[in-house]
Image (cartoon, rainbow, N blue to C red; front, side, top):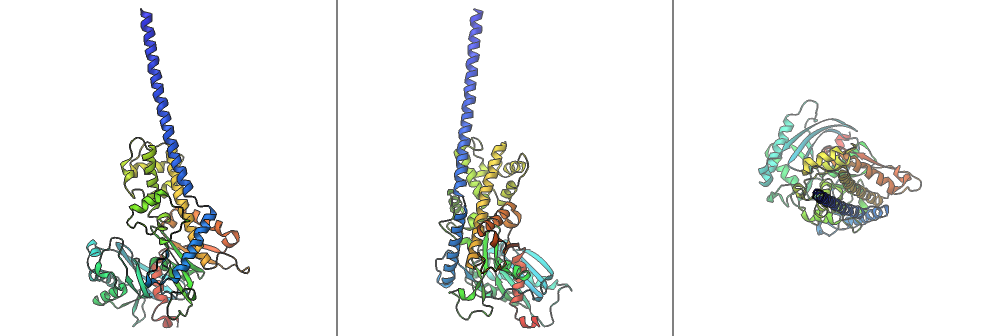
Length: 501
């Protein structure tokens, strides 16, 4: 009887072990199936983000074609061109000979900066900067209240001027105004506001000349200052680059957003009416964030991002190359992997569903993680998305996604730059003459995301070839929106001939 009981116990134990083993095997199979599904999503995403050389060349050609179309289409007619190619009325870029004291006002968000810059002919001798926060009520109040506040801060800044900044006796102060909101310019020192962005909503400013609004406010505050140039940050970057380097022909901003500006021959601008400028040149603000082409490698995740954005259907080029959106694209892909492949377990991490939780600086930090266990990736996932207990293999996949998104963005940015070079005829060596071409580049994405920056520069060399690449230089330019505005105030000064003498 005892043997029977023992035998039964052994059989039961074996059955339990077999059942447990079956559960383990089943779980392993489920995990393997989930991993396979997740890897299939990554592979499909990588393939659709592909940017082979031939595709980038097509993007560059499409960019050049849209540049031609935008230069021919009148701004006032509102022609539906992909690139606005806005005439900036900046026909005199800094020569490097500018001297004297000039000011800049940089208004582009909830803060603005005021600068005074002492120029010494080829160099910035001295400068001072003050940053001011705009009260929230003024961002939705009246035009008069906002510009009175700005003018009051300008007056306070001037009153604090020290002996290191000298203005000739009887000379009126001159200001470069960087205004990073959509305007329709009619001259170098005038432009009507098209619409407010970035949290501003002041109805009585829309359609008005923002230079006139600021001028009236300065008069009310008793400040004797004249706005000499109205520019955006990309044009300012171009001006800052040209001041120190005569070979600068274009500027690109790669930061939260993106844009490009370049120097065009005035007689190559069909929509430029009236007498051509004496310089024979005109700076064009491309607004290239609006660029679109069927050659762009868009994915389902990009369309999800676009649909959830504040401006669906707009700024499509910007949405795949600029800092505002790269982290969000990775979040959307991870979210699909969590939903369809249980990549992070049976429960989808709640934070993963919140748009723009993952920012591009976080992406950069994970992409640059060189530790053997990818501890930076682990920390970012825990602190930002509240995802714990990830394996090293999972963290490697996250880094892979960062690389896919950053590589696509950087290579497409390089293709955009190639489009500008083609338009300028600087993508080839002519008659054996190696003409030097410099692109001024500014923005936090380019400055701080090393993998992105290196990929962009290497891609441009790949597209141009070794011989032409030797003639093209990308030069980092800092604070173009501030210093550049002061330089443009100098190069368009009403006292220009006096300054030269």
